[in-house]
Length: 261
Image (tube, rainbow, N blue to C red; front, top):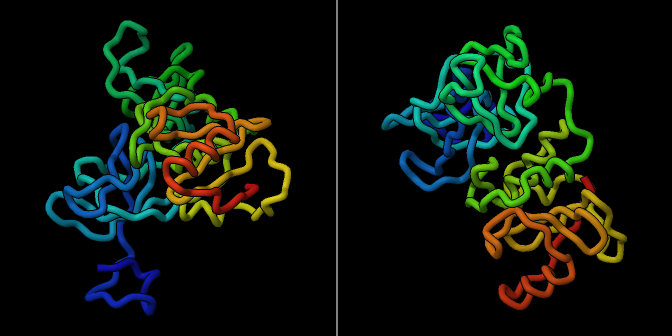
């Protein structure tokens, strides 16, 4: 089974327009096969097109970046028009407007919700209430992707992760630029085509992206980067000069590309 957009590009036994759905759990692992390894994560409210179903899993294409993979059918619900997104690194959905109420689920930066009204300092959604200060309308975005990446400082490293609960290098880049209202691919190899190339002699500035084999970092200041990395197992600052030396010493890799989004 393949999406109709691939007709003539790949061979398939059948083609489908697919069915619209949305993610209805805090984090939905996007797998390389039913029950397989995690490639990425989708967030609460992310829209998807369901292309195929098998073994309790759905093969989906994410609306935000076209990324495809398998996720549990139980993680999906009917589509709904979102009005707001989460702008804090994390928040919670509550059953009622009380800070003492047991939360229903965590929600993470860039999660999409449908606000139907207000109850004091709380925003009401069909599933529950969220602190209104943790949300912004979809047309209001952060201006500085580096500052948004810095809001996730110290988050634990997690391969394929896309949230403050766990995030990897390309997940951090995508989350930061999505929070700033800019489209961005999901994986570091795809992100190497994001923005404009920089020559090796160019002066780097805040927000530039640096790529090694299988890794990406964001320039955050003079001789400083921020990246989710397996060295500290977290989102961390590192001196660029020290990172270049460390990565070359331990992994034999040099910077392969420099991009200015």
